[in-house]
Length: 246
Image (cartoon, rainbow, N blue to C red; front, top):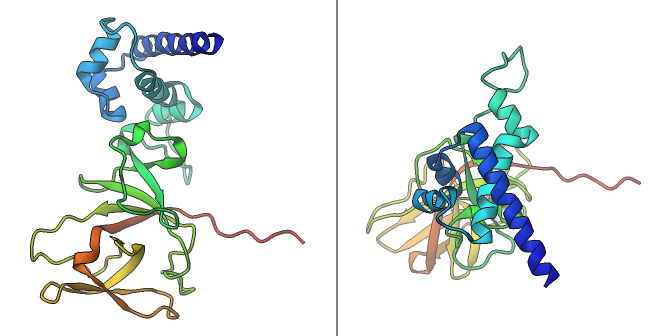
């Protein structure tokens, strides 16, 4: 019983903080909806008191967004970026609205369809990433690159452990992939790979995949085996391997 009471107290505290932050910073339901995925109607019912006992998941999502945006050190930095002049090579903060939350998956452990979550805001922190809104609308994911197949030691390498932003590529019948100057994540019945596609043969029904690392040979994947295709957009982060201290 005590555990149940603690949960209720925690939720009530968060609701109180939600109302306080909304009132203090004049936050609109539209802004909260845009950044959490919760409908404006649902938010209105909570903020005007119609919904007396909202779901804990909903409360957590609203609370986490508001605290991070308006009361965390990072949020303060974002709010003050327009007020403070930036000198020389100092880092300029980007407004929170210029970011989007996307689902994260590790290509080394993922099986089947990528991007199963309806709303990344409801996923655990280890399964989501905050990335800049730099591209057109669509279904975006961040995935972790696994293995050395795209690492040839040159400046164009995308080594093991790199996190990349990808966008799902939806093709009409007979339409070809934009293979020039692009890389792809291909989800097939055989697994998920990150490759350069050097040929998309719609007549014979296959794509030819190539790795940067020359020790891996080119190979075909039949289109009938393909479940999803994502086009590479940018490197999100990379932490290089750090050797042990002897």
